[in-house]
Image (cartoon, rainbow, N blue to C red; front, top):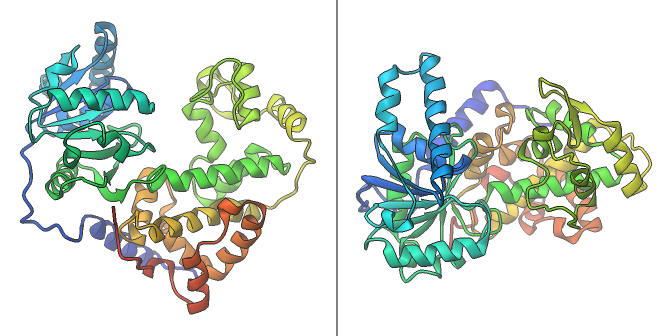
Length: 430
């Protein structure tokens, strides 16, 4: 492995962070729309967290829910978050009231009509989002920016429900949205330059780190995450226990491995009683009401302090479903099986022109997914281990599953002895 000094890593991270703000074709003179009032659709975990960013920055927020009970509950969570920060001395008590004073709770979508920007933050259901954007098109004032917080859905399809696709953009916040620094700004096929410029500038105003990405399933961050999750699940079917996968990735530097993350998010996301999905292990756990940390049992058992404990119940379910014999796979091999596919998927994203530059991929993973800073990001780490090692692993994984075949650019890097961080496929194209 090509080791890097702390100074080299620090210089790369600083340069990457600065480059992410640069959008070819846009300049400081690109017109920006005036944003004085932001509308938020949904006062749940995401909607409330997103709204806090704007209220904290001094921007008025109009937040809409379907019932008074849901609205009151959401605003109470926001107030409690602000109050905890005040109690810790981060700002005075009167600032809590000042920030809450910028919230205007409503129960009708039509009440957002005069907002300058509206962000839809409902759950991931395309039909629901299509319906909302059809209504927004009818009620929003001309020139308003219509944004979706979707984490994976096709924003071009969402925009097609309007007669103003030039005003539609993705603003993908990360949970908890009032804490996480990353904001994926997703440029759709018809998104106007001034909409992109306005959102990039607004990201700075609300103290986010923004990267501009293109429309593809999962965009940049989640698409790479999906690749890791698929390989982690494959390892379980080869006899590697979930806690062994997590331990290897914890050792790599992630605070949470894929199965720890699944338990935190909730195993029942996208699952319902009696459902049969493409993940029978998850189905079996949920049927036993092992749905993650919230039920004190998921892949792991949890004590009162929510500490994860390897579960005999989960181990028995895995043995029963997979029939796999226990594996003695080393931590290094587990890491390669999970991390190298992430690098390969990032290269494919660049080939498809859905990211501006390799360093943007690293900015996404460093600021949105807890990638260990001492390894610089997937592209930087790819250069540390070398393209040849990544290619060899991907040829093996690709032989088992064509979806993980090596990217052509990966093969070219090996042939030219090139670097992942120097890949230039022409930037973002919609």
